[in-house]
Length: 629
Image 1 (spheres, one colour):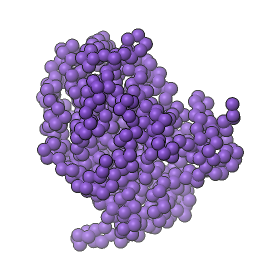
Image 2 (cartoon, rainbow, N blue to C red):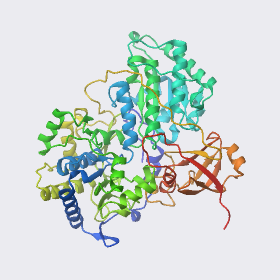
Image 3 (spheres, rainbow, N blue to C red):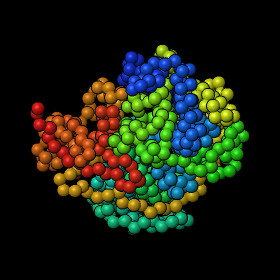
């Protein structure tokens, strides 16, 4: 495992996950055979038998209950080609727009904020410019953990160019050590703190002309950040904006805004995206689109949405009511495309619990690891008549499947993914399939062919490999026209729409909640750096080989009040669930806040979060010391 020196963003670096996690799961832990549930148990089956069984059940449910009774989950760790084929199966074969992924609601909330601010969620900001920035604003839980290489480029700008850095985060991360100003709001107060910085900046420098909307008023103490830090951040931004050289001189310095939403909580993600976009527009005006970087919560979130893994979008981020787009896909696919928006992830979950969603097809997703509301998700999957899972690991979702098709691991795939700044990156298979495992694209194609036959639907499913799938994508999605395999350049081909977004508008920003009630602490979670995603997915005790993320972070003041010692086992309780975990006493979290890594125990912390209904999602938990048996 080594860096790609031709990639203009990462070039000499590689993320900790990529460098060290490739062997976190042994071959013996991977799926090497397909399975069909007989009675209560999943039992080995041939690929053909598993496909036939899945097609039979899906055809039966679709014919009896209609296309709306079938849902589909793609994945931000699947390839573009796999996600494209899945949504094609959903729309062209079954006739359902019920397609999303477990992180889809958070991604869609951020995308909506960016679209309203800039006119598009696909922004041209180039991450290769971050290292050359003269000033930066980082809005993230812990950028070092969530986006390792981007954090390195921020450090490069500070250390090598003397860039001035503002960090807005309630939790400490290594990037904070490089900041001139750390604006530290309470948990959930990031949007309010950003709005307060914006208000202080307006008071000093005014508002740029020609921007739509009105910048909302804000209290300097809103969000719980120290007013002094808010004012210092505003002063720094005013100074940095004033120091930018004349554009005509061709030497304009770069002012970068990096926003990395948390993986859980669509309300907070959307509101913080709005506030961060407001601040970028306030500082850069109509150039803000080239300065704003939205870093998704998982690797291929942008690609999944580009491929149409969304209940309201066709491939290419085109809305379902775009008649011309639907007609283009109808001609290419040979089948009608439904025009009514489908159910998103949470809509499908609730529909399954109510018995309205009868079947679910899951490709590479594992809601138990990425989504809150574990008990509700369990009830949703138990309420299905049929669950088909395509995965390379026996995840908690796969354990509940009626048919399980074994996929090849990431390092055994051909295909592409789309990075944070929309670079289309090529994946080449370096491992042979284990046993009977088949690549997901092939299982999707063959399932589509069988299902189309049973439903008497004529659909073009002739692609002979991932390259042919990308040729189809490139012919239908203008942003991917140069993503054909024979044209791809390492990290240089970007999937940007031909139309440059021209909107720049301020938006209202909502509050995400206040401090916890007496005797309770606010719980937050985030993407971790040292725990393997694949290891966590199968709840491997070796998921965190270094044992660096197997504890709950507690502020020393709270630990003293609770009489909790470092390393002692505590129990987090919220009335409906509990989690036993070791305590780590640290001022990385502010008083009143607990942090548990999302991947710990295979997503065990999600049991303490309620289902995401679009409202502020900040659970309050009690802490008790575990008594010896």
